[in-house]
Each structure stands twice: as C-alpha cells, then as structure tokens.
Length: 125
Image 1 (tube, rainbow, N blue to C red):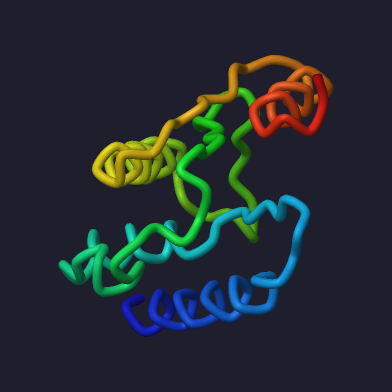
Image 2 (image 1 turned 90 degrees about the horizontal axis):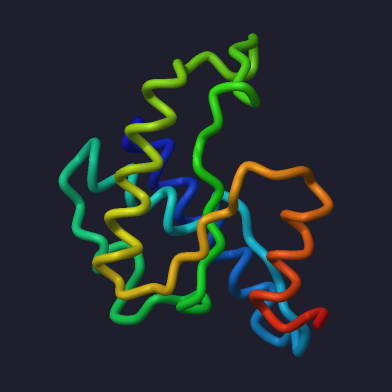
C-alpha cells in the first residue's frame, strides 16, 4: 500500500506541474492530499514530507462527505462505507490542520452541488 501511495504522490505532483501555467481554475479530485493523508495513516509519513512546505492547492476546498445512499460496493469499489467515513474524517482533519476553508457539499441534487462549487470559486454569481 505504501508503494501505491508514493506512486499516487508522484502522479499528483506531475498533474500539478502540468497545470501550473493555467490561468483558469483547475479542479483536482483525489489528488496529492488524499495520497498524503493515506501515507500518514498507513506509514506515519508527515504531511510536510509529501505536500512540501506549503499547500499546493487553493486554501478553499470543496469536500463531499460519504453519503450512504450513494455508496455502493462493486468489483471496482471494494471498501466498506465505514472505511469511507474513516477516510473522510482523516482528510477533514488534515484540511483543518492545514487551515483550509472547507466547504462541505450538502446532500442535494447534482445541479445544486454544481452551483455551490461555482459560487464558492466565483465562477458564477
């Protein structure tokens, strides 16, 4: 698992580097933060070792909590809902540590969630 997470760190850093010259907002899903939090959980690797000295994303973060009615196990998603809740808690704790402004998405329809994201980042008024 540790090797997988280090590879995820490498890939996320490459994604960040590829997008560094963009002038418009770029959204990342399950990126460097997730891998860093996973490494800390599995191998006690400090966030500073994977994230560096500063958080490479916006300090405003939109976070979707796990919703039981949207959660389904499958061949591709083999972990349990309880695992998803624990992972969410670890990510939320890390975001608080990093002094991020967390906007938690409410459990509403997709169109309203999109509107929340757009308004959060001033993409639409």
